Image 1 (cartoon, one colour):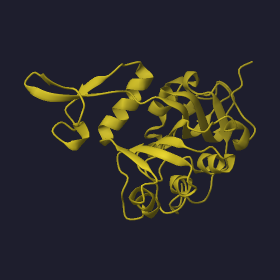
Image 2 (cartoon, rainbow, N blue to C red):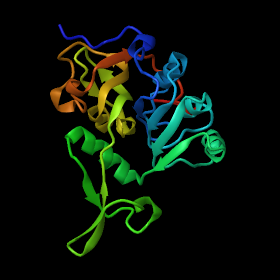
Image 3 (cartoon, rainbow, N blue to C red):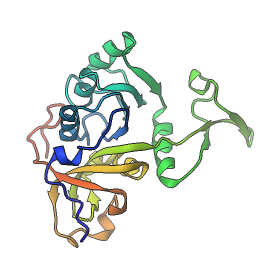
Length: 232
């Protein structure tokens, strides 16, 4: 019987190893799997390469992982903002490597990994420092840059509901990077607020099929999100 439900966060994250590439879902606080990140900090893996849209807010969630000195490199599109003091301090001190990727390119590089695409050409970034050293090509009179997929050992994502097969649904914008990250990682670990009986999810509403999910763990719904905003 297929049953991907894990009884605890600790067991779901137990085999994340030092030096792993870990994708973490979320767009700022929306869809950020805060409980999985906290459990990863407690688990102790070090020298991680993190793939995320941004580089953390305040000192919680992803920022807390950076502050714990567990991250060697971060691949993201939006590292600096008003409350990114943790990233700023580590980067300026030379303690954190940054690969800056335009947001559309980031999403497509992750999606390409899940789709089995070897590389793709995009006009975004051409003529800038971000294209330095990369192959370029003229296509129909426009210049393009060759970009490669981003693969991961693990993906930590947050969903709304899941079943024992790993089928997932999301809540509104909390969906963001979750589905493409799930397909791009060797092992996807999803936190869900509700585990439902097999067959309860309308197949037309399933966003991430269980094929892309290896572990599901239930976490309680908090009154506030990572950034302190009240959740519906």
